[in-house]
Length: 531
Image (cartoon, rainbow, N blue to C red; front, side):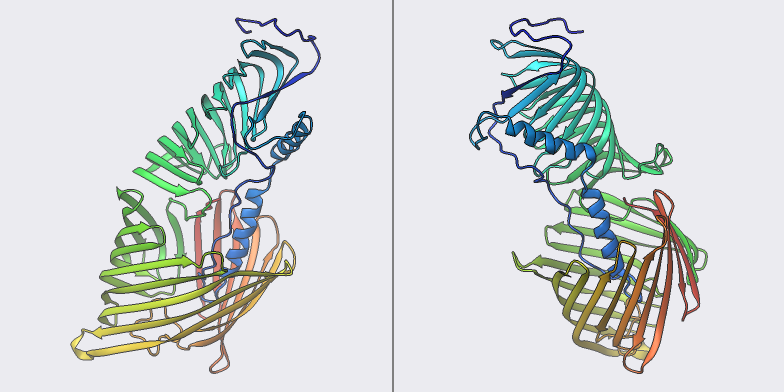
């Protein structure tokens, strides 16, 4: 119960009561104007270039993630209803109103103090909802205080959607500052919890925080941090981070930053088996130097056939530009390893303003070594991409054209000289989504570099340049998806590759079984799912 009950306004006890007051803030709100997560650019990650299905699956995942819950939809409906009840239309330069409801509501017009008891529902028309069994506050000071358990929903423009249940909530919606203790809920696609939440106009701070995309009662994987910061730009920054599997700490790092709308690889080990490496486990580690721009990373791969192989990188990124100094072993997924001892890589990716086009430039120079060759390796690549083209809501067209130049100054005495390959590359793929379960694609790819004219087979294992591609993906059950991909040598009319996949959803992790029919090789991979 409250210490003070105000009697300035007399309201009938026992009935559902409401009032609407003006708040001192100059922002405007448009219903359903929330930030939308975009699907990521397509990047092939299969011999038969089945990455186009990854693009489709990622887009579907983002659509599911962005779909409003019933509670969120109801808030927008309620906001429109309250706006319709206003005596006049809201104007950009006027305070945004809020509506207060409760079974027992008292309000002092002179001081602005209010007290609400019993199924309290407070809606601030910018996109906030506060619910509890009791609340108090001050309209003139634009503050709500919930001393017990409270529920908060935030759907404001340009910020992550936030749904929280916690205790001892104090929030000033004029200044957009407040606190909440012992809370848990969801921010964007992440399930979050913390001992204390602090709300500021431009970010949220969580102490003794944890986050995960796994919705199990005991998450299969999670991250904890002494302090976590969430910004409207969908950026999440974490300090003194621990990585946990089923509640057990498996790794630590001082700093971690990620963009909430991205779908990066998870930060946990990958395990599996393939015919080239045998059974293996691999993991990556980051070491911030000047975060978020200058970072050091290392990756360790331990296999029963190749032993321990690792590489280290020093990476600098600034918007579209990145530079990397790399050293160690790299694997292309086709049984080909190369040593960079070391190599320097610079990349630049830019979208042409409002045009549906983008381009990427990549240059590398360094010492390369494989089991058959060693050289000073130079590579230049310029690619132009058209944004994914959606046709009739069923077809997806992907277009790419580029130019590559590679030069190797061969260093081994028995095979010295210079090997140079250059030319245009073309890539076009057309996919169709027949329904929510079935999709298929056809495509054509021409790559000047191949294993016959290049010194290395790393990322370049085909012995021909011109190829036709086709594939199909079928979601048999909610947990099982089957994919087949074909690669046809257009130069000698021969079917070169047949890849068959079985994706098995294990709740918060995924098992992938791959049969490479033409090569008669098996692969089995297991990793945590990043959503």
